Image (cartoon, rainbow, N blue to C red; front, top):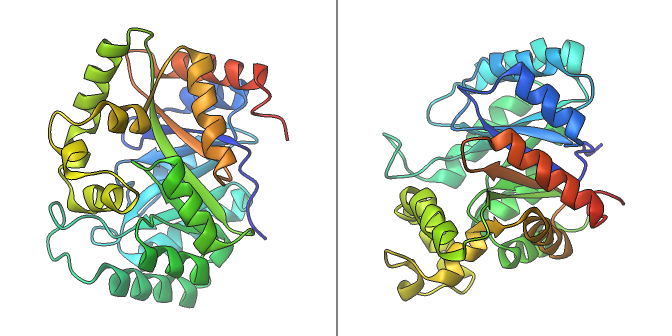
Length: 280
């Protein structure tokens, strides 16, 4: 059974996420918290957030298969699922050649990792893949509950939905910035996405969905920055969420920039309710 995530989620950095933040997001109406930046295989941070809350789902986005032992992840899943079986979802990903020692054959590595998790009894409907290209998307369709991604656009979401079909989860993530000064917001967006756009997996995926070398050349085109970092007032950001849902997203994860990310996320949730984004 595919887990119910609601329509709106929030990203927190795994090493810095607090129980108080998770509680605040639950109260604001978010359906899930996504732990970013390669959460550890022991899943202790996810467990702390689940223990502090009563409804919200906690997911990993994503566990790096080159860094985290699959058997340890399976053991951690069962430890937590004993108390929170309906609120924990495990996103895994193959990392990036520029960042992970020993990186090779990502589809083969993910397949072997899934084989280990499956053999340990981790349910497929509690697993997601960080899938950008067609091969990984097809693997997600065949083996797990769906896909969770960052640095994508509604066009990628549309293509992912076509490959995964109607019954799988498609969970794109976006940076968001409350700033109605367009040029200042774009400058902040450029600084935020610059490290990721230097990674071949992200750049190649953006080329697949229609962006050019000119778009991807630093300082990056306005249209690319506007697609990757939702900015403006809360209503404009909620409209960006609505565009992802219209393209086939099951749920949209938001990574708020600025000094008060929880405040940003609260404002966006309010605007999403006003636009009936959160009503199904």
